[in-house]
Length: 347
Image (cartoon, rainbow, N blue to C red; front, side, top):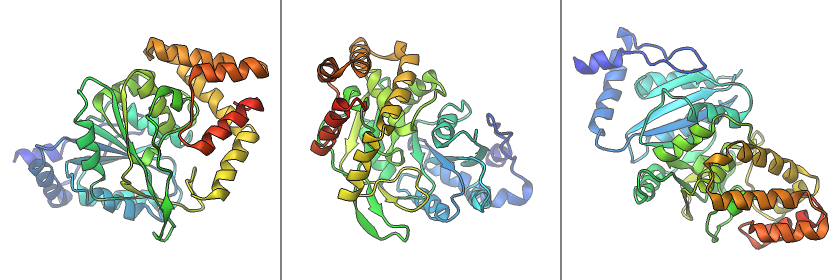
């Protein structure tokens, strides 16, 4: 009886109305989901933060890969940013199957994908032990969450900690086409000022990291993954990069930001630096960090200020300032790109 009472309770959401209360005609579907949660109550609870926008082509496969994780204590929170295709119907179908205690849907702020993810991170109704970003078009390997949690458990709970990894790249039909670069240098705040280490679809973080992101609030940022990397390292937290891919990252024509391999893609990224896109992204990120600088460690405040000052100097002081700040990119080619951007005043 207690299970039936629990699953008929409604859960209010922020900025999107209310989660629907379970009706009697759907008790059997949700009873099975509730039993699954009870069986795995000894496992840490993971809140999967899924953002959607017109993603009906691949969404069903992605949700199925989340549900079949070998770590089973999962609650999925989907924030739909105004889809006009069949996305909302797909979400509703899966909610009926999962049960509304473990699958909730809200309406996003419709201010871009980064704002949508931050709206979920900062939603105080969502509570868990760990949190995972999820895109609408990828495929998760079965051990993605268990690998992440095993790494995060090695960090004291009071320390903000973020796990991320390399990804396996696949075509829209699922055929494998390669991997994202393998990074060997240590994650750091200095690296985060000029590079996003890993895609958000690989990121899992603990409650202490979530608290820091909530403290910073819904600031204007380039991307949620880059912001999480900068902020967690900036406050002196731990970021762990796993060279083993846990996600099949689908490359297709609707990717907001893709990760295609090869020289052609490398040249595209260099061209973005030369045309000033990188400079604009830096300006946005630095502004967000300055708004939350009281959260940063003294050492990282110094790195931020040195790099910020260097950006506005003429050639020689600019080069020296960037060097003194200690910022770096993960690869040799990326390092040359950063040097070119510095010389051309495109940082």
